[in-house]
Image (cartoon, rainbow over all chains, first blue to last red; front, side, top):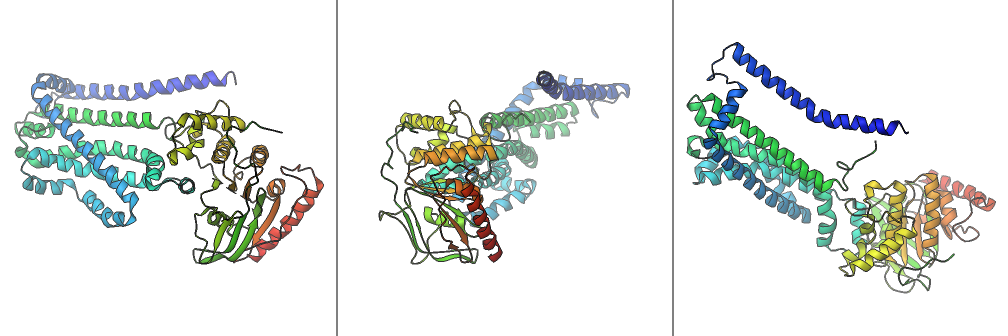
Length: 273
Length: 260
């Protein structure tokens, strides 16, 4: 016992360090290898720029990239916010009435399974304002995981507890407020994590679909534009920014989810075994 | 043995009987029981045994008002008032809300009834948690409590409601033998004076806790003749008479299972 506790503590600490060090080491090794391949083979930068050059481009072109990043971020988070509010409200409505759910859920599915890239051109034709059109595209993609996860969560409250609430005379609203919504939180937060990434993808895809009509819009437009001008380093720089944004969104929502659930949910409670 | 009552107890006079008249309930096309009449004596603990699926839990649900008693059927208190709304319930698995502390779980009733006085409710919840041996764990979430502790929280919640009728559906079945033994004793002590209906699969548990024990059998099911073990619960399991009764109960249960 006296030996086991410290050694377990030590192995846990090792694991924590390894979790950061190992992926970082792989990233560093890949970047060095990439740079080496580019230099040794003297690959011209309009075919494949090395990571150092991409970093330099990020720095020198920050003036064009930064406003584009802000546009993409704004659309992504706005779409996500609307998806959260809409998806959650609709899920609550579905939980209140089976008839409403039966009537409308198939359409949510249809909206989800139709590839956004196929709908985007139509939306761009019918909606004059390109920003609004892109926002709608991103919303369509982000909305479904919130709706379907929250719906599942609201239905998954322990039926023994539902009975107990009935016995204690709880109203529909109270069952929702004190039982169904808390029970749905882990599902909702899981949906939020997926929707965060998807809304970024949605806004990037829609920008691509908008093409030159998306003049002055986000990072995807910058990638297109740089492609036409054969400015490959800037393409990579914009791509890197999109990736960073995606990673940041994922980390952000993972942290939010952990903070919200760590007190009680099986996925976040620290266990001995 | 006396315990300081944390709140005015409503059962100074024994709780009334529970009367079931001509109850009828079908589930999934099967008629579980039909024209079922029963009287569960007030202030006593009645234990129901029977093969799985015979309708014991369904009978509890019917008495609680969670299932309708069928056309012409009726569930009523011995005092003439309805049973529904005066029932506390304790189920099989720990039906606790994992996002609430032990205290929050115990004091959920006042919140649902929209009663103010949150502090008073919390104090009473804490006192009850102390009574079931969970002093110091009031703020803990269920995930950090053992199975026995969670069931103790559920017991405290049942006591918190202070209802005359207590319906228990295999409340100790998921516990290990030692914890079950301890909790049976606590439950018997704390629920004395109330009309308790306890569904169980364990003949010894029924003999230990029940003033009256029925075996429920058949389809549609009927209640067998009552067995009344000697003495007051919680009984000492070393009593040889209980062992003899256990043999008889097992006989009846085997017959009931063969008939089903």
